[in-house]
Amino acid sequence: MLPLLLPPLSLCQKVSLADDDEGVLTQWRTSEQGTLEVVADAEKGRFKTSEMYIVLYSCKRGSLNVVYTWEGSSASLAARTATVR
Image (cartoon, rainbow, N blue to C red; front, side, top):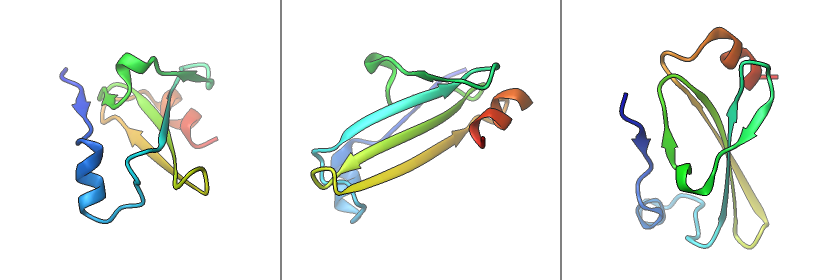
């Protein structure tokens, strides 16, 4: 399985998204036990089809928070359920 890579932040800025290119990205992976595990910096922006993720992007100097979710097409039912709790 190849991970999906996010586009460069500057691309988000070009299409008028909330991104100010100076935000802070926090990414979590859901575990089978229903807990969130922080994703290491080296892995941020990579998503595996077998996993579920929640991503928080804080931008505009902290005045705006954008939450994204990633549902891997082959993620387990336990991981999918943990993400929506």
